[in-house]
Length: 171
Image (cartoon, rainbow, N blue to C red; front, side, top):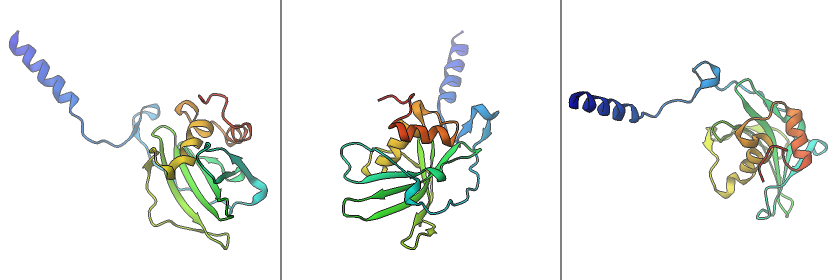
């Protein structure tokens, strides 16, 4: 009996030791997650911009180009983000958010001639509590990933942006 108990404890401890593994989507029959190739959208135009709030601590204004919102088969929501400073400077980026893992990725940076260029690094990064990720965290929490689940259509994301938050978002 003691040997059986010892072996059982050893097996449990072995099972608890985990290696770093790739994300496996249990909803997709245990297949590993694969990112799909995304096409760059047209450069954002002022007439397509929807403003959203990132909270009272930011002096910048944040916008999403409504025509750029796409939800891929890989369950990544991609969009163009435009940030305008109080002094008039403007930055545009094309990004993606994975709701299931709370990660973001920057695919392209906007240039002054209204074209896109590839960033130096384009890797998935956790949405951490740092100032640089404030807009992406707000987009994930209140607009694109209410309760951690991705919106089902671009139209649903647009309605959330226009309303100031998704109805399922917890404020």
